[in-house]
Length: 205
Length: 87
Image 1 (tube, rainbow over the protein chains, first blue to last red):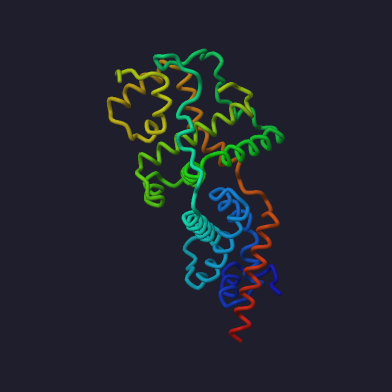
Image 2 (image 1 turned 180 degrees about the vertical axis):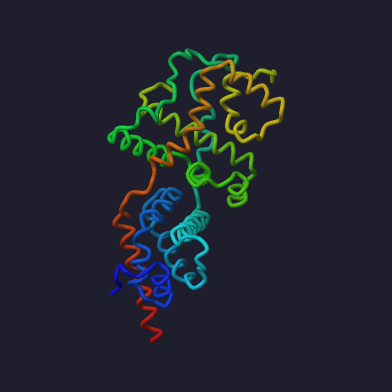
C-alpha cells in the first residue's frame, strides 16, 4: 500500500517498476484533467474511455523515459491529447455539416450590412456570469455548443481556443491547410457565440 | 469587392483578420469598418473574449467521473498482472 508521504519522483519510480498502487496514487490527482482533455476532443463517453485507457497504458509504458523536465501532469496531459487525436483519426466520421455552420451572425440587407443593429446584443458574458448559477448555465451551454459542432470543427476549436495550439501546429496535426483551420475555427466561434447569445444572453441571432 | 467591406464580409473574415492572415489592403478596409461599425466591433470583442470565457467555464471538474475511475482501475489491474507475470 502506498502512503501519501511519497514524493512524485518516488511514485513515478515505483509505478515504472510495476507497482500498480503507486501508479494509481500518481495518476488519481490528475485524472479529472486527463479525462476532461480527452472528452473535449472526442465528445462521447465510449470513445473517451477507450482513449483514456490507451493514454494511461502509454503513460505507464513511457514512465521510465519521463525525465522530469516538465511536470508529470503536463506530460501526462500531452499523452492524453495525443491518444485522443490518434483515436479520433481511426474513427470514420460520417456526419460533417461544414456547410451548415454559418460564418456570420445576424440578418443582413442586400448590401451585406446589418439589419436592425440595435437588436443585436452586446457581448456581456463576463459581466453576467458571475453568479454561481449563471456559471453553471454558461458551462452547460458551452458544453452543448461544443457537442453540436461538427467533429471537424470542434477539434479545431478545442485545440486552438482551449488548448492554445497555434494554427500551423493544428494544420500539421490535422493535415489541413492553415486557411481551412482558420475558417473552421471561425465557423466554430460563430456557432458557439450564437448559442451563448441565445441561451445566456437571451438575445436574437 | 469594394475597399470598405460590408458587415457580412467583415464578420466572415474576422478570425483571419485577427490572425493577421489577410492582405494589407483588406486588413485596412476591415480595420476602418471596425472603427465605424459598433456592431462588428462588438462581434470582434466577442470573438476575442470567447477563448478566455470558454477556458474558465470548461475547467475540469474537481473529481473525475466514475467512468474514468473505472478505466484507471482496469489499467492498474493490467499493470499488476504484468508485474506478477514477471516475478
